[in-house]
Amino acid sequence: MILCAGNNETFSFATPMGLGLIETAMNLTRLCLFDKPEFLLFVGTAGSYGEKKIFDIVESKTAANIELSFLSHDAYTPIDNVVTTNTTNIKDIVVNSSNYISTNELLSKNFLKLGIGIENMEFFSVLRIAQEFNIPAGGVFCITNYTNENAHQDFLKNHSHAKELLELHVKNRIKELTAK
Image 1 (cartoon, helix red, strand yellow):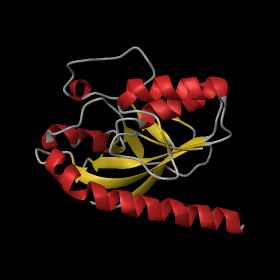
Image 2: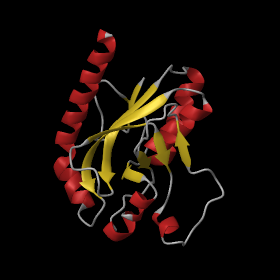
Image 3: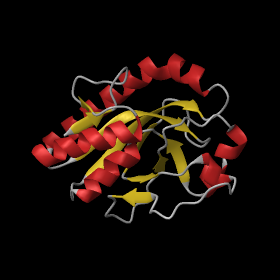
Image 4: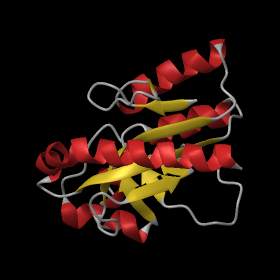
């Protein structure tokens, strides 16, 4: 099953789950309880902490839920804040998820030191629910912005083209897999 966030980030081939961590967790849990999918693929846009460029396509099976306050040593968590469905030795780009978009470029560069490359609001919930229901899962993302003071304006400017690139990428990957 292919999933997306919803609102203005929808695709003809994907089922919307909601925006952010909570809506996604609630809706995906409900879906898995009543009609458990064999596989979950989340498709969406993401912000880059600096290494990935605008319109890069990133595939991942690893997500984190780390807030900026953790980076400045103003918070801690007793829960496991990294989840992966990666069963290979291939290193994933870790996707960080929060209900907030990072706009502090200097602080968010610290995510790179932790091995976290991009951020998307929903992906951690998708992987955590997939883990709970023992469903293989992954994500495909297109970079729309850097995590800086222009994050929102750049997201708005690049969003439509990023969605087109994602649609093309996913359709090509499906063709590749069905040709085998």
